[in-house]
Image (cartoon, rainbow, N blue to C red; front, side):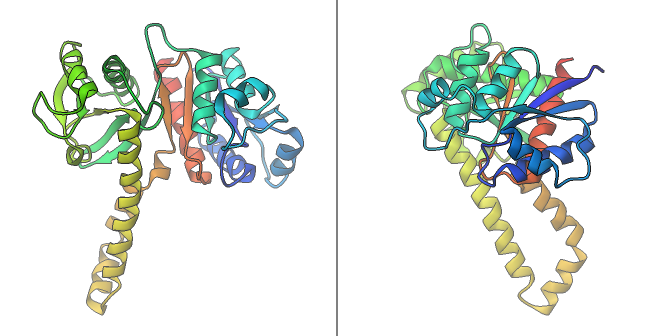
Length: 321
């Protein structure tokens, strides 16, 4: 398998470049087949790298500018051409990297990727997809935040690119696709959902019809299609509910001597449950529909999340080789 390079935007995360560098170095140890390119101010990255014993498979691309979360995406991409986001995307465009990870502004990353890398032929809008845990595996939810308002044709294309991703990367032979809606009946939903339904039905995909929110984690589909507004609400609710549920379980298990004993016996099982529900284990959400791979990590990503976002890139690139 040939060597490949992944660019990592070091200046976008809420926790600063030290966290991104740490996560990248951890990924470099686990994925020696990948060259990891840290993108950011040279002096900052040299200082961070000096804190670690090794920098094997690590390169640095100097990018002196930083795009802040509050900046208007279009203006920032146009004016800050030496920013870590723009420089990383340019490296992908030029073939110097085969993918990019960024925990920066979603709007700036999407705008930059669309303008610099470009959409795949025939794709109207790239979608942000994320893997959520289900009762029997994972489900790809898209869009989960890139496109707040969607035309029916966008939703139909989300089904197509989502199914392609699950087939190539997750090795699901015939992914089941569902349209997130307020009821299972064909005629349910708002105007966009009603119009998207027949498009998905006629697409040739393994379309199972409308699914309600409670069915997303039940594992009845492999791809859950929705607009970015709905998807982001579902995603943030899932993350918040998982964290709250684990807190409730921990509180109850530690409430009496009997439950503490039970918790001790079941500790390995609870550790596995916690890992399955932890968004950091997924790492990031790929923008699907672009000519090259861009993975958007959580703004609050810690080193583990950055490591796993890079892992997603590795899996995708290797599946394409």
